[in-house]
Image (cartoon, rainbow, N blue to C red; front, side):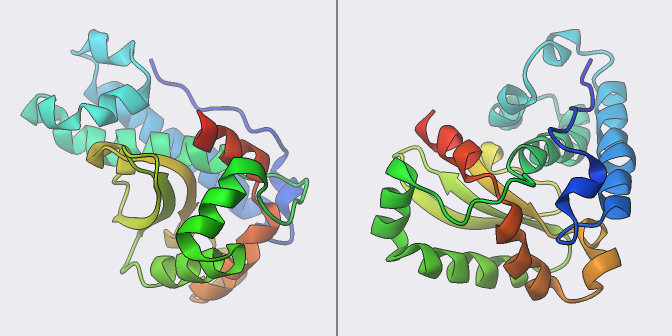
Length: 200
């Protein structure tokens, strides 16, 4: 059975970027809901419940048709949020370093240019969805967006940084000001964790 991951911080620790009430609802209600529905959908597929959700999503095309919708929505929701929580931190670090920084600069020109491109692409994601920095099968970096709870894992890409732009992720603080939320969230990104995902 899949379970709700514990956070490495308290709900209030990311304030003022993300307020405690938003974090509490987002983690304990929204994410827990995805976990509950995923477990229910896979009750008759115990072999899938034993796998890491990333493995299930990578093999999405080969899943039985009757569970694809549930896995896309709820499996994607579980995987996406699990990564999102892991790359947030109250211990602010202004920028990446090491091989990740070198690859960002090589790919996008500079770290600031990467941030601008990421914010622009993610702000333009219509409706609910996510903005991602992914590692491709060729170990290149790429900015992509996905709708709803779709995961880059379903397209053979490895997400190393993801930002949730469903309104429930930011509405209490930012209302309809998604670009403001996106420009603020850099202050709580755990770049050490992002770099670890990139290297591994």
